[in-house]
Image 1 (tube, one colour):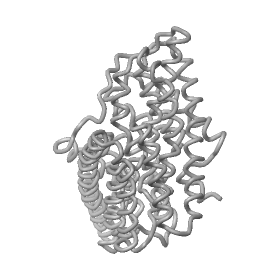
Image 2 (tube, rainbow, N blue to C red):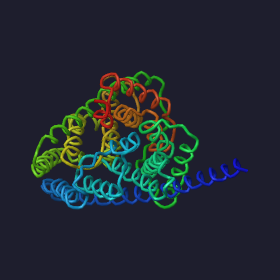
Image 3 (cartoon, rainbow, N blue to C red):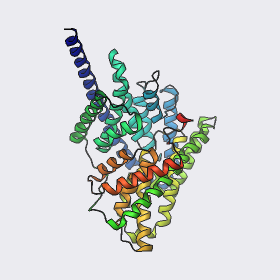
Image 4 (spheres, rainbow, N blue to C red):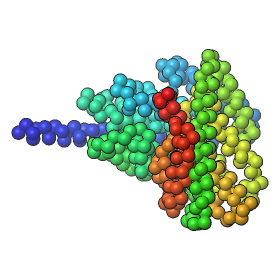
Length: 420
């Protein structure tokens, strides 16, 4: 009799956890999808206005960073957003949690950062906000507190699923980056949240981010995919070290207004000369798909400069108080890196490789090297491409990039301080 009562109570608790996970998935999808739609709309609007008046760029980043600073100081308890580290601390420290105000804080700060030109993306802002939804769910019922990690991971996985329409990538992101917990309930919670998020997004908010025409890949290009993975590994370390350097540099500036003005000036100046650095850069990736080998060679110097400057402007954006991370910049830079390599191989060595393939593989490889999560990168980019034709070369390049990046510098921007 006692065992039966215990089993009933256990089943009730499991059911309650899964209901909470489903609720977390729905709320996370609403947060991610509305933030994505709003950001895309206003980013395009301000970017268009900047084309009409190019000097407007010297006002937009200043407006964005200043507004974020004011909101942070007077509305969000004057606490800086630490991005993914906040989520890692919540999972790894029993006495730490994500307060409810982190949901609007990251939501609005991520939105303001990108639409006013901050060269990052809304992915990290979304992940922290949706992880906070999971943490909030775990506090609403006493016994759910012990399942906090499960619900936090459910929230962040649901957020990634909604942003990229990539449920497998959302699932793997939770396990690769945040926790290696393998309990059945934990897995069921994450899957439940992902399913709820995916269904809501698919039926009400679905929009393909990119349109890549992928027809297959050539076996003779395999060595060059490996080469792309090696270069991506080195480049990922450049991005990571750049972010760490500028965060330290701006962290040493005592006056917040100096930090905001200096950061806005650097961001504006770089965008003035290279407009594709504006915002998250997805429109720049779409423009790349229209380039032929000949036209790409004509603008090769510009492509190289964007590749060189993107980690700097991203790092300055984050150091000056912008909200975001390296997710979108990694995809952006990977596309540029892949196109540059394919163009050089075709122009100088007449190899006839397919540029769009190298762009997609480069996106995955740089993301893998930047966050040390090759499985997430593989399935995320396959979801972006909306097919798995490049699965084998993407796997190879991602694994190579991760190994190279980890060998050179065994930390990411998420874990560096945690392991010092």
